[in-house]
Amino acid sequence: MAKHDPQDMAEFELFRRAVGDVKPLRHETRIVRRSPPPPPRARQRELDERDVIQSLLSDPLHPEDLETGEELLFCRPGVQARTFRKLRRGAYSISAELDLHGLTVEQARETLEHFLRQARHGPGYCVRIIHGKGLGSPNRLPVLKARVDHWLRQHRDVLAFCSARRQDGGTGAVYVLLRRKP
Image (tube, rainbow, N blue to C red; front, side, top):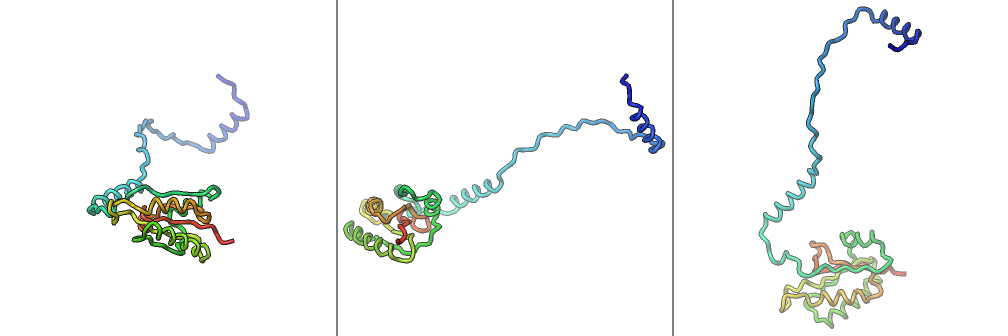
């Protein structure tokens, strides 16, 4: 048996006298085993996914709702990634718009050059160019899309461009970010 400090013993006696006649509570020791909690669920994501599936199944599919061709993307070196992300989200206000539907390749190029010159001197620096998806062309392939892609890459005032959001024309249109006026 270990020796106790006399001062500790005195304090213990003092405590016993202060407490008086007390009966200790009797309790049974029970071991309660609980199952581990279930893993957390991303309920909002599940609801969003369910809504997307329901919306896809609720409306009939129309061919004009399908995107044709690839998304156009271009960004010059030096343009910040954040700026390009904002352009892709359609976060910039469109200051001017050009629709090239029905034009020949030569007419479209001249019209595009003139439009970009005018837009550069206009109030904004983000424009939308509608080149079409090719649904009305003989082979149902876009005629101007590849040309517009090529022409915009060559234009010195174009900093970046990308296909528009679906509600703004999808892969049948592009948002173009222009160099600011000096």
